[in-house]
Length: 107
Image (cartoon, rainbow, N blue to C red; front, side, top):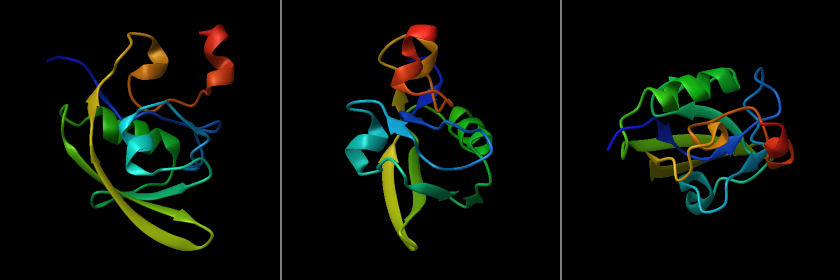
């Protein structure tokens, strides 16, 4: 199967690591990532921006195991799940992009 690895998270700002929204039934949503979680680290890579998240996830093989450390309310939580291929061909659904469902009509 070809395609870019997908986890289904979005952000409104490329300069932060704050999760704004999640795609329904996405790997990230099923694993327990929530809006307003801040992504601190993916596997062994410290994350500084949403661009870092998108680039890292996009470089992975489909089905790759991802270990994400998220922070919410000052506490860190480890969340692990596998990437998957995008279910739809629209740009929003291929990786981690800085748009939300509210922006869907603009795509």
